[in-house]
Image (cartoon, rainbow, N blue to C red; front, side):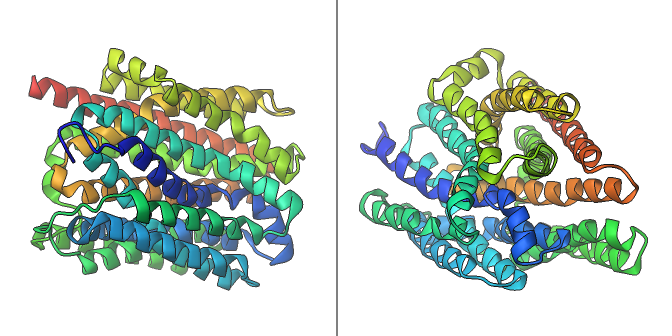
Length: 460
């Protein structure tokens, strides 16, 4: 990178965003296929949740290791490997004929996705100058939101014309195009003195998080005090405690404990976990609400979630959200953005008892909030980490997002199951889940804003 940045940096950003979009779509594209999978594969609620969580939990467990490997061995190499693995997993998922095969294929896709999610942001941090980082991260964040919200739209279109496996096979041509572009355009960058991958830490974090989510999924059906749930929860606590101990002792940790001494980092971390917890779980419930309560088909449901993505893209690519964030400052921007998202979730839960109006208002509010808060949080995390550890920083950012999303699906799914089991209607259960998500999001906004404001005062 020169002092002016890489001469083809904007074209390269487009290429890595294409690779990023492919992975992000699969975080949400499966949501609209839930009725089809339930019918054709005889999948239970827990099966559906594991189809979603197998993907996100494998990613969240491997992102830190993938980021460390990218820093040491080359970010371009990891991008190429990620695209190949992700394509192979997509092929296996599209051809699966049982719930077990689909869960396994989704886990395989998560391995490739981990490599992609860490390297895209790390490459962006390398090819742009520090002054351009906020704008580049804003575009990167807009693609994140686009993938988050466009998944149901693309999934609905595919299900309206093809069988459910097509939602995975559509990844193949996109991955092939991204692979060719990465090979031709993306420069290699690495830190030869980087630490070696923390393989034990990756194993402990993956096992611990999977056990935690399994306990939450099993709670409504087996009872929160059952041996199955309490035993799995105990395993989760033990393994995650071992992970924390290992990271504090090992000389090459995936998650360096010293990062938490920076309030910019801890504030952004707190906000990232809670926002993805609330949003991931809420979107999981929203697609079911549109189809099972309001009676829309898969494509209609996907189209009705599109205003969220369109709002984010419009505000980020026009530069409006960046100007607002600069004028307000990072802490206020994050608090305002997450407050808007929370109000959007409340609108969906409270105002949409019989129609789409409350959902539309909610999606517009959520989109505006995402456009303001998400880039600010990502930039706060990356700016608190040394440039030579850009891959690790991207891994931390992605881990928080993936873990929050997976846990949100599990917890809000458990809220839904508990309400329905207690005799409430499906609509009531879905609304309760949305409100839980709203509380998590607004709490994240104020926690993050408070910590970031303290950090700014200390620096001043």
